[in-house]
Length: 114
Length: 111
Image (cartoon, rainbow over all chains, first blue to last red; front, top):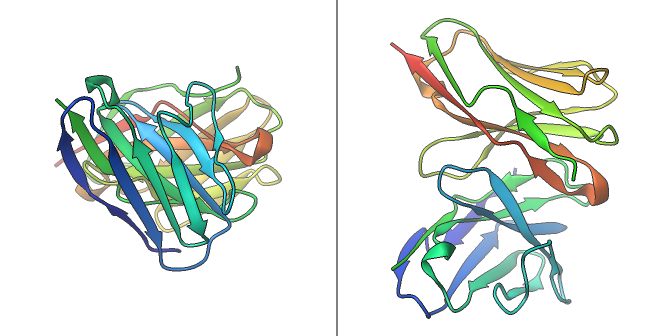
């Protein structure tokens, strides 16, 4: 399985600011995803990070709030913009093959907005 | 929309007993399912998967059963250990090869 490193592992941020989360994989992967996990809840897909093109966002998530980059097959970033306390969550990077089988997750970034 | 759900939010078992965690899904077109284990402060860890052309798959101390007739998925853990305490999620791969996650079951192992 791929080794996925997320940075930062946690952060406390002031409302109105932005945080960029990095996801680095130790091998080239076809699919990269970003999920949100609110406290005590399950995982919700934010978007699919597409290499060299705009990310594909799920319903309820928009690029202005969650801009995503994926410059190559091993790296992606998720920015949480203009944060509010409601954005306090764990943000998770996931990688998978083309069929989204054998999907693996990073350790997550625990974000608290105050 | 279609979703994946779970029957029990919390399961408490005695160390050494077998655990069964259940999951119901509603998308009959889903062809692939995964169970994840998530310990506190960590990301979900892949446990075992199963394709829709199978009814059962076994791993080390874990077995996944798939009943397509009633759209039911279960994870069986043999000889449950304290290290098995975690939240377990099922996920289905359905439309567009996107994973949909269930609500999660917390497994608590009593010594």
